[in-house]
Image (cartoon, rainbow, N blue to C red; front, side, top):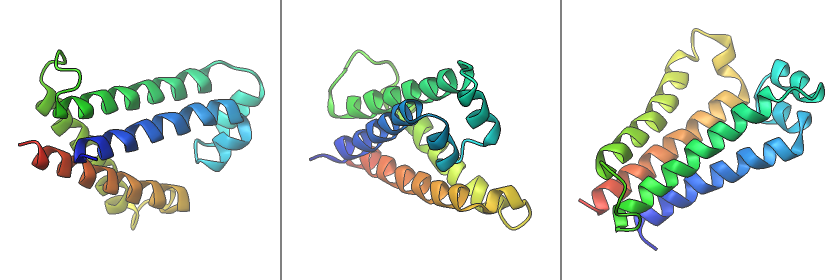
Length: 135
């Protein structure tokens, strides 16, 4: 399996997890750190939490397609390498920003924020690997 396939697989996994959160309902929003407001809105049947979470899942699936395009799949996608560099930057920024702010901002020190930042850092490294492997 190629580095691009690994990176895209991680993106697809994250997208699927976001869809599972929608299906799992308020308890899943709470468990995965979406916040009490999102969980309460989901309990009340508001469409906002599901729409936001579905939008994130759609973006992550788009990340996966762009990352797969590094191997020649989906060749019609414009600016493949540039977009995957941006995706890598988004993951890296998410990891570094939270970890960098954690000493000063209490909400950045929750187990969810710290754990998800480490996951984002791993995603950034795997996407960087995919970019290097397809250079």
